[in-house]
Amino acid sequence: GAGVSQSPSNKVTEKGKDVELRCDPISGHTALYWYRQSLGQGLEFLIYFQGNSAPDKSGLPSDRFSAERTGGSVSTLTIQRTQQEDSAVYLCASRGNTGELFFGEGSRLTVL
Amino acid sequence: AQSVTQLDSQVPVFEEAPVELRCNYSSSVSVYLFWYVQYPNQGLQLLLKYLSGSTLVKGINGFEAEFNKSQTSFHLRKPSVHISDTAEYFCAVADTGRRALTFGSGTRLQVQP
Image 1 (tube, each protein chain N blue to C red):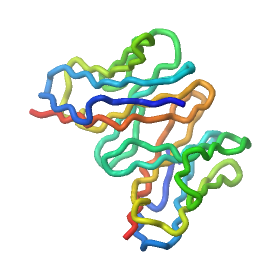
Image 2: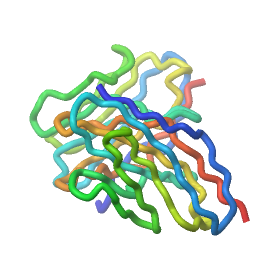
Image 3: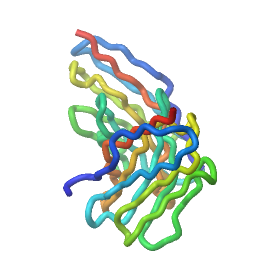
Image 4: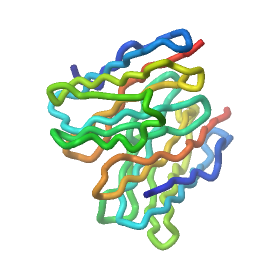
């Protein structure tokens, strides 16, 4: 597609359940990022993939969070045993040669 | 590590008035600087970026920003705002090696008629 695609756009889950959020970056973009935007807050960096290099996981808030990127394209962010404080909008972005990040519309996660 | 401070969480302004949204950063290495805009219920869109060269950068929708290395600032300006400029504005910094952006907490620009 023309832009970064994220799914689901909205997810409501119960505390303790696992969730998976998907990101389909712009074709040809080698760099992919996950950020979290909590209500009234800025964007919190979570993880960064660049080509075949080891991902930069320095922003993941706990070991309940993990992400993978298969085939250098689609990425999945997994949150295990969700907590209420995980409620946020999870944004994915990909980057091409210009240095600009292109963001998806985000996945809004609500943990009840 | 870098950090970004957006000094104003909200900026109310009347239509056709000028506006400046402030951004200061801290980094021990060379940086790239960005401003992104987020309209209600939408994703983030790049307004402008500073990578190198001229310190005055022009972006979309009539916005511009000036990189001031000595003051570690990258303030965003527009000489005359429109109602449609109402949005959340985020300043971001990336060191030239790491490439992951660090964002400020955002400034909500509220343009009033």
